Length: 248
Image (cartoon, rainbow, N blue to C red):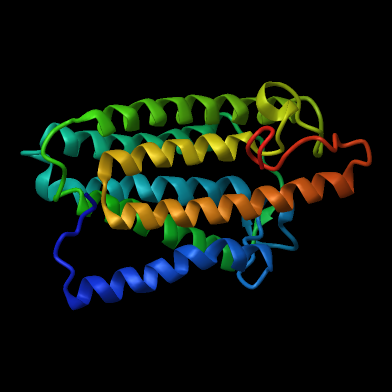
């Protein structure tokens, strides 16, 4: 069962608009209609990457907390699990920005605003909609917890491998170690695994659409990242997939 169960006109309009956005996001980024220019894809002047990324991930920590205040005082265990998962996800990313990643370049202002607003709204709305939650922790909840934990650990591990590449050297290098031997962006796969865990804990239609948006966006970005490495490094391993080893 996915919430909401009451499909009134407002719900239908809201989910229709966000659903179209979720489905099209990956295509819009890949074909550069709505290109997210940051990191290796940044061009020109803009918001310093570390500052931009800090705001991008710390603001959702705030919106997650603020939107949950009305029910946290009497929250059930399923509600606490959803809140904790979203909070931990963005708190972890904030920690990585401050203490793990090595940044260069800028984020274009348009990209910065779009991502900040999108992430803050997704986190805040998942947290707010969590006021209506599943009754008990069931088998799907347990699976969600397992996927979330595996996703966060795998994502952090591969982020650390990327950061270590640039610790003692300038510029970009071919990633090595872990699942990087089989895929260009395994950290994206683990991030999607964590979001799938949040979806199984939340079971809101909005969370499903947020997952679809993440899936499309990260798939497109992994495809473009692989192309970028192939152009920059002639010896880049051709057998490496985009995001999922041996599959995609």
